[in-house]
Structures are given as C-alpha cells and as structure tokens.
Length: 281
Ligand code: ADP
Image 1 (cartoon, protein in one colour):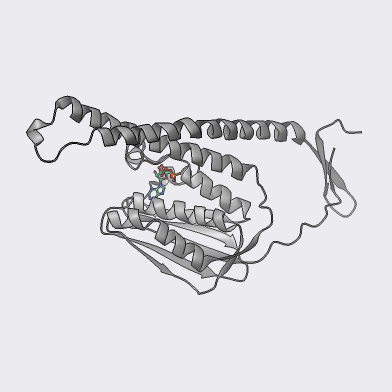
Image 2 (cartoon, protein in one colour; image 1 turned 90 degrees about the horizontal axis):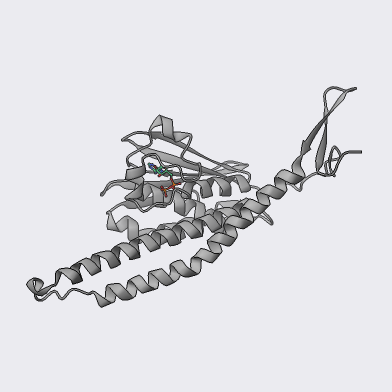
C-alpha cells in the first residue's frame, strides 16, 4: 500500500522485468497551485488601485497643461508638476502591464495541457497582430512584412497564439532601431507550423540566449528598462508554446538581429491513451 500522495509508475526494463518509480506529486502539485493562486490573487487585487493611479495621473496631466502661447509665463512649479505627472503616468502604466502579464502567466501555468484545442487560422491571427502593433512599428518607421502559405491552421487557442506572436513582434520592434524591417515567415509541414519573427535589431549575446525565456530575465537591465518592458513577455510565449505541445527557439548574433521561431502543432492532438502503468494515489 503506497502512502497518500505517492505517484507510482511502472517502467518496463525488458520483456520480463519492470522497475517502479515513485514520486510524491500531490504535495508539490498542491504547493505549485497555492503559489499560482497567490500570484493571481495579488495581481488581481493590484489591478484596481493601479487603474485608479493611472486615471488620477491623467487628470493631473490635464490640469498641468502648459500654455504654448507664452513660454516665459510658465511657472517652474507648473513645469515640475507636469513632469511628475508624466512620470506617475508612465510608471503606473508599466505597473499595469506587469500585473496583467503576471496574471496571464499564472493563468497559463494553471492550464496545462491546453484544454479543447481548436483549428486557428493563422493568416487572420498574423494580420491582427500586424494591425495591433502598427502604432509602435510606424512610430519607428519599421516595416512589418509577412510571407506564408494561405489558409494555414494551427491547433490550439486563438487568443493565446495571438498573444505569443504579438509578444515576439513587440519585442522585435522594441529591440530594433528606426527604419528597419521585421519579417514574419510561416512554414508548414505535416505535423508542425513554424512562424519566424526576424528583426534587424540589437541582437542577443550568447551568454543571454539561454536565459531570456526565464521570468524577469533581461539581457541588459538598463537597455531593457528604457523599452518599458516587464521581463515577462518571453516567459509567456514559452508557456503558450509548451501548453500547445510546441516550442519557441531563438538564433541571434549581437548587433545583427534575432530570429525567434514559434512552433505549433498543425494537427489536432491525439486523444491521450489510457496509461495502465501510471497510478496516482
Ligand atoms: P522585456 O519586457 O524586457 O522585453 P521579454 O521577456 O519579452 O522581456 O524579453 C526578455 C529579454 O530578452 C529582453 O529584456 C531583451 O533583453 C531580450 N530580447 C527579447 N526579444 C529580443 C529581440 N527581438 N532582440 C533583442 N533582444 C531581445
């Protein structure tokens, strides 16, 4: 009789011998869930006060409008007040992004594997992402181009796939200079669809490449902070990819740009076969 919480798994060694692996999964699953719920609750509770801060900062910005007509008549106090209001607005917007990304990450961690994958038309998703990021790309005169087969379908969740591609395109724009190009390319094989997001930006040093998918890891703190990033975007992409049974990879050279590849299943997942060898007690 195994004690409560032991996960027993029989592994066939050869035709006559079987090894039994045992792991205490219940306690570690419970702790992981408690941690996830805590992060989700805290993030949720922070949303309201951060939203209020943003509204108040907007009201302050309106109230400290500088008259363009007579710059010499602008009081130093008013100029300082406006500068502070701009800072509060900027920082509260960043906190708002951090909290919604933390919430998103804890939701993704609680939904493995993906429930009910559905066919997702990728042309539509990509067109929407290009549209969604147009304000930031055109502010830097970055051209976002797409090339891929028409009508390709991935299997999964459309809004998660849109979030993953958006995060990659937003990064490509954020870490590129003006007047460059971001190219999205899609390839399809029988089992997989791969979407490349390639930029001509700053690139990633070899010692950082393996770590950028970790939560809060940034290749260069100062450089990243000026983009207003949270350090969670790629962790979210990685979770979405793995929840779909796919993966995300990067190839990059410092100063020469980066290519991120998101790989998603092109077929519906096979129904999980009942495993006679795994018993959870
Ligand atoms: P952030 O909010 O800082 O962009 P991410 O998780 O999206 O967080 O990315 C983690 C780090 O990976 C970034 O801080 C940056 O250093 C690096 N990075 C991500 N995408 C790119 C890219 N396209 N080009 C260069 N560096 C990148």
